[in-house]
Length: 100
Image (cartoon, rainbow, N blue to C red; front, side, top):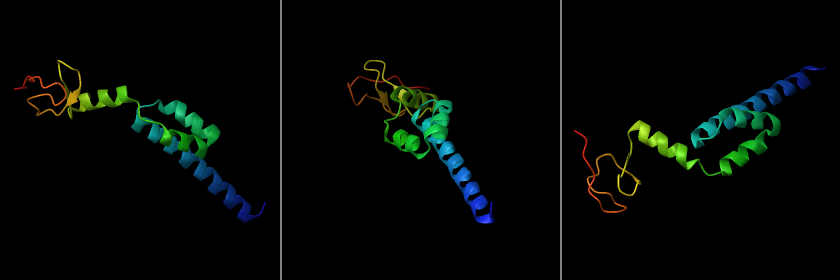
């Protein structure tokens, strides 16, 4: 093997690992299982990353993250997410309890 083919293999390996990490990172951001998408990135490479980017986020996980981070609260009447400072729900119009 000459030096150029060794460098090419190293670059190919590095780019494949980069795609795998991209899959895991995108999966976390969209609320999916990181390990599964890391494996998909290993097996399918850029195809898995493109599929993941095209998929909509997991709405339930996104909702739980917003509630846990305190960037939203849940209306007790309609269960929609609203801003923490809101006094009235923009979805159903009910008055919201204020935290002290």
